[in-house]
Image (cartoon, rainbow, N blue to C red; front, top):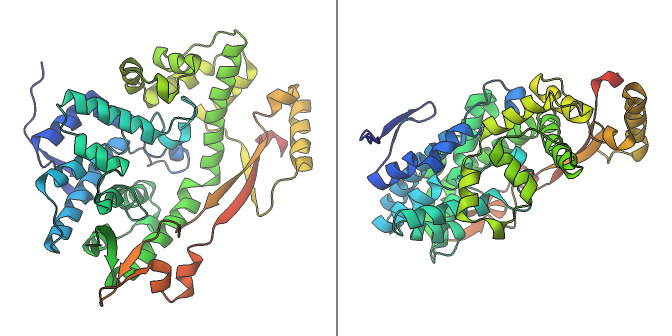
Length: 408
């Protein structure tokens, strides 16, 4: 029995009351596809570093909807023509922009289904819902794909200054307790405007944009690229590499049924039938936690050890370097592990490895445009005379290597 709740006001710890503006949006939120997002963590394994980071994609999607409502109000107040149909499509597109995320979000982007992004799966979900809701998402899908003739609408959903980023920085800052990410999203939205159907920022908002970009850069180093989080995500990905390897050798591995289906069938985007989409919609974080618990009791030492390390937070050591990690250094750590645990060289590679992370605060290829008081448009870096603006365009790379703590 489905008795629909007519109350469309939700209490959010970031913004206070969030209003769901119409029945169509409320129906989408009530759909099982969307309710699954309650069980998908926004920040993957970051809670192993920041214990409060247990918020979900459900929280984030509703926050984005709230900010999109504010953006539409601001733009209309500045005589930007947005029809009711366009407004409705913007709300649906932003609400569903992350619906294709799998368990633990970005941490498992290509570990369950190879070469299929969460954006691709989001479109599949949106197209399925569009059929179910009699074509009412057609315009939302056009905007989401960037196929609509008014580019600023897509920029509100996906750009260097979109509602997605404005919410996740502020929300992730709140739940991790990292104050550097606490941006003033209301101020940034108040500075939005549209010129030639392109999303722009008014000149008086230029330093708010600088603060936003600087906050994003700091959040990446302190949170998203935190060394412990990187190491934990590598371990999680390695669990699934090992599972696939064992299955390939004919060794039985206990897995939740839907997860096992994707790991054994080599599903690609072309294979995403409605049945497979429904299978994916049944996947959430609990499938991965169950996999880790089952794997921690498997007879294979590598799988057992990887799973226990994550479950018990007995993670690898990870060290950063300004230079690429030498093979000599890796081989030394690997040989120490092989000797201590009687592992093969191949098995040791699951515990000793290197990589690199990159942080770019501002991509000039997708510029933020500043609307000057004289009506001219200027790219952000040219509008900001201070050296701090140009520093935001510098890509920073850090190299790292991981190894078990028993080596110390």
